[in-house]
Amino acid sequence: MDVTPKSHQGIDAPPPHEAYRNAPDLRREMHHVLALGAERDGRQTPSVTGPLVDATSAERAWLLRRAALMDRMALEDPGPGPLAAAAETAEQLVLHDRRHPDLAAGPLHPDAITLTPGLRLYVRQEYAAWTATRPSTVSPGKCAPRCRASRAVPHESPPAGEP
Image (cartoon, rainbow, N blue to C red):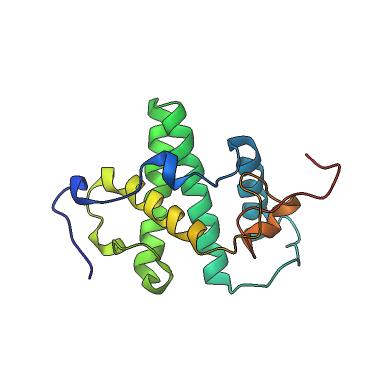
């Protein structure tokens, strides 16, 4: 059942510490999001490890991880710049999910998000749902080189000797 809250107060998103429990540290995630963006824009050859996903799903994974990264950065530094970046990337995810509602995983439908404060809550909901549906054969907080994790699993231990 889709619920349309009249305010952001009705959005039952997990708190940040739960939503981002299995997220890589900020520095590592920033590296992976930048690499995903470079693959998306054709500036870097896509990695070919793990199962391939369609372009729409890959775009959503990039938008979701980028929005979650910006949300986490805004939580650490709630200045105007980080807050604006978090709101902007969250809005981009919501707009994408409105065009592709079958990719949304959380209980609150993207059409229900009408107020700006709800955008970041939607990101947390979707990130928590996304990580919950990934295979659990990985170590939390670790990602493999060149974001191959974005195509198969969200966090994977790097080969021996890699940071």
